[in-house]
Image 1 (cartoon, rainbow, N blue to C red):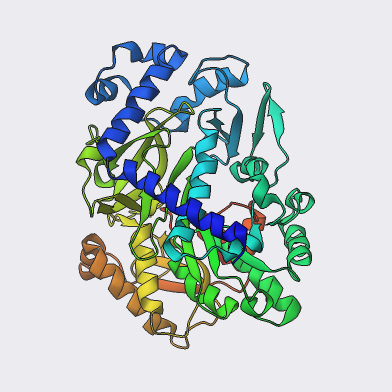
Image 2 (image 1 turned 120 degrees about the vertical axis):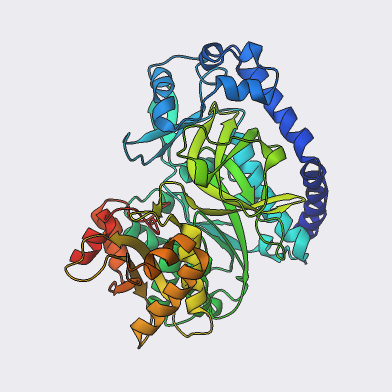
Length: 495
């Protein structure tokens, strides 16, 4: 083991101890964050508009700061883009992370001098926890690949603008720079097909030890490697034992990954968002990711079942329970207040506080009152795939409200690597799991309101064609795994 690896192990254990100090004092840690946020923002325009000077308790805060989505924050963002300072946070943002919006077009999420370091520190700590937990630091001597967006940034109102992953690329520590791939020039390529070809050129003969990215796009990289060489990933990169991912549930992709890699490896999950780095996997044996309580974010939670009520329950960390699906609300040192990022989470542990992402509050199916969420469809598919040779590349689910004949149903669009011979039998297994998880769905089936789900096969490469057709091919873009309409379904039907 190299000197660099030995030093990494010692440092990792030191950092792990420091992290668990605040993780084991969660309420004190969050109270400190809350008070610092209010104090630092009380002289901003938002702070004046919402009387931050008079806020003494969390109840005061709830009374004065409503929950809002981007549209509710947009007037403040527009003032910043017009050149104003001290609007949401002291001074001006250092960056805007540009993301895709739905009703509002592009969204500009502020990243401040105070919030930027938390993104970098959390990503670093995820690596260090892996080292501390396994004693394996040999990978620091090999090459690491991070599949990400272009680091080229635009400028508006003297503020740099780009994708979060492109912004973060400017902060790779110097001690990792010589180990990092692909090159800066390759990362700047916008066209994903061209970019992947260049990444393969640069990595195919390297000692790759760590690979990170959204699973669907890393899978494409692996497939292209295999097409070019005829070899498994583990044959090309024998020291590759560690995959870092975030943004989606990895379980539906796992079997395909291990088939492409040719051996079992370790997986570490992150929960980064443009709005803040929320959690990372701190254990290889415990479920869930450690919620980052000292990273400049004060968290609130609303039960997803109540979210669209007139007066939903809104709580802090002190009152959360396991087994409840919550909409997560952020208040941050980037100037987001009562901000709904759209994700739903569930606590897997309260000592320390660990969470898993269960889906999106807007990504659900309830065309008939069934309230189906992403967690349920992912688990149903996973259970049906267990102990079978079948693997999938991608999937999405949509309601079919007006079929040409028979009762309505949920239509599952699945791109298999090797499709089942008996698709109806496979569909029955998925449907049985759905009914066991969701009593509303079960009641609709038993009451002859819905017929059991139907699987429609998507040709190989079909989801990539879909993403190209909507201009979101590659990078950090993800397929919604379920929706309450047929916008995606209608395009897939034409492929």
